[in-house]
Image 1 (tube, rainbow, N blue to C red):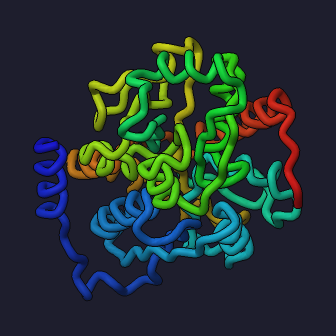
Image 2: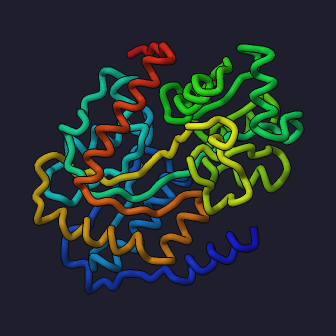
Image 3: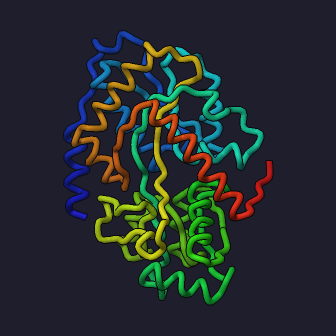
Length: 319
């Protein structure tokens, strides 16, 4: 906890404002599909602040929340392809077209890849008074009573929801999915004992965990997250399990390479800065750059992976 506070202080001390003299070009706008104050929004603002300094231009974050991030995606897909408007997307955007068939954007057809930004940490948590002290404990309880234990996520078809479905498939258990509108409501429900388990962002869960109101049992990534080095991974109890939501930048289709290349280069530089890496860790995430070509291949494979999970779990979604 002290280490995280010290890193947060260092991040604040490192922030620098851009000189008005540098604001000669059009600002770069990064659109986020979630409300201000959430985990993705926080990472967008960290990235934007440091891109300002590197690019020598204003970088602003604009929130267009709703419909699992698809409102923001549609907005950017239909924006002018001049390279001045970008989308900070996450894994959920790859899933959304298979959950909401009426979404207007297409992946990858509606966008140009700009670069990978990092990985966001998710965790499995239980109420603070739960008899389950470990993930193995919880899974043993769930196996004895199929369908009895409800788990909370931030919404139907979200990466959190599908991470729970994947846990059911790999661990051989049956849970009851209960969707909520946003991570704060998930954590409130868990702390109140309304649900038996949740899948939520590490950043949103840490405060309640430190207060003893909830207990984090495991991180979803294959490797332990730097923010929670003493918390085991799901894979340590369920071999082969790995859910690591990733963040990436996209531009409208047709945006010129001459406009995007400087942003990609700046992004690579920014994500290697210690202040940025520390700021991501405070948010329960990891700053990690990959170039647009790698991003395009990853998006294709990741989408296919989650379509397979949807099919294996026999999930049906409405329009």
